[in-house]
Amino acid sequence: MTDLAQLAAPFLDPAAIAIVGGGTVLATILRTQSGDLGRAIAALKTLPRRRFDATALVDQVAALGRIARRHGAMALDRSVIADADVAAAVAAIVDGKTPVEVTEIVHHARRARIERHLAAAEVWTGMAEAAPAMGMVGTLIGLVKMFMAMQDPRAIGGAMAVALLATLYGALIANLVAMPIAARLKRRAREEAFERTRIEGPLVALAAREAPRPLSLVEVA
Image 1 (cartoon, rainbow, N blue to C red):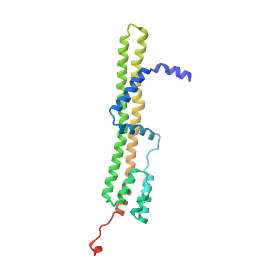
Image 2: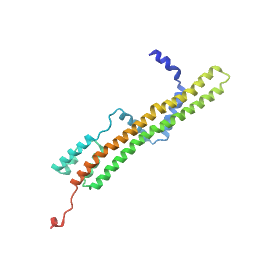
Image 3: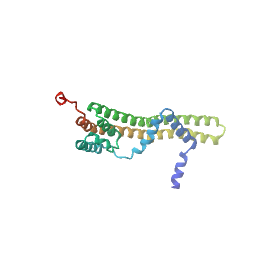
Image 4: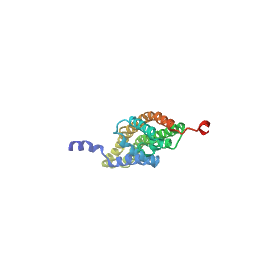
């Protein structure tokens, strides 16, 4: 452990870390809405999870269909539905919405979810773009300090370290942290969007079966 610390010590510079790390975070905050920034941070906890699978949701919609067949659509109002998209569609079915209206609700919910996921990924993409620029800023600051200390050989080394390490930190943050996170979040968004298309058909079929039917003239007579 001591040998590792000694090996890493030359590559640690508080000034360069503050310039690149602080500058990257500040640039990301300034260019991002607070809601998207919160989603980008919250999205990190989804990275270790398995790939999204809509099978459980499809099975739940099938179970809801059996409940509606036995007890009527109003019985669905008492069902506990964790998924927000399915819950919105079922609430519309209970309210007597037509299959076309339920289809629009499902489409809108899926598009809104995709937009939220992509917005979170774009925050990390922006961070990957900002980090090398902040590294260049740190390099320029280090060079300025070096030129100002040309008459003091002991100060030149520290200034040169800031200049070189700032570029290194910017490249590492961009290519080993921010960009991989952004790529994985985008892939997760595409996978989930594709999987969620599986629940549209069962929900629309349930809406078609439970939609109120207009009374015919014969029935009225």
